[in-house]
Image (tube, rainbow, N blue to C red):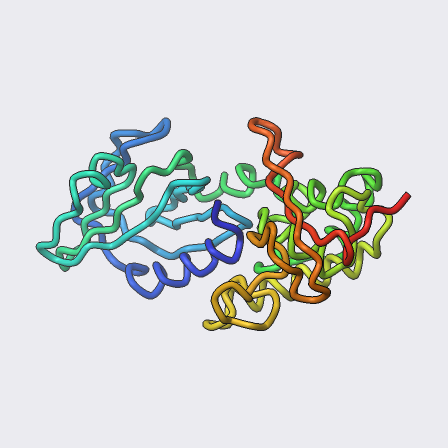
Length: 266
């Protein structure tokens, strides 16, 4: 699943490619507004909140999308066709004045709302370190309301901090020296929030550092524990452990940790 930094980078790419452009043909193919024509509208810009993408459309609308595990956005050039497979999964089509086309593919969430309603749509989300209105104190407060909740589960809850996914929850547990299933109240929550915000910002904005947590960009060395089950810990050499995901239980995602660097406590 794309994390907040992934969606932030996507918005930046789309902003530089199609923002400000007029739509000459196209429609929504999913959601309650499926069938709505986009012809005559203008792509005013892009904004993110956590893993959610907001496409501002003039006049006075917002398209709210979420990629979940499988969705994507792509732009085809003039006289270039989208392959049949992705084309059959297109949920948004917006042909622009130069003949290029913006496609939203296989997105489970496609909601068209009035621009004034978007805050309500996203009201359940916690503070986002990648937004100008980031409120670290509020993120700390929310995390502290359930001190007995497992560290990884607390960070994955988008109501606490928006934008952290499984990779970041696992890496932040390692960097904080806490077992991912120990209660978050046992760690310095303010320090974790500061570390999470800094990591997301670097990943989102530094070209060579996308989701690199070790500082080493070499293949196989960019993460401390995520994806490293059965391999030596890069810090101490102990074999990294993994617990399988429990289907349908968001509290039990696939989780990696070093038993030496992150011992269970209590």
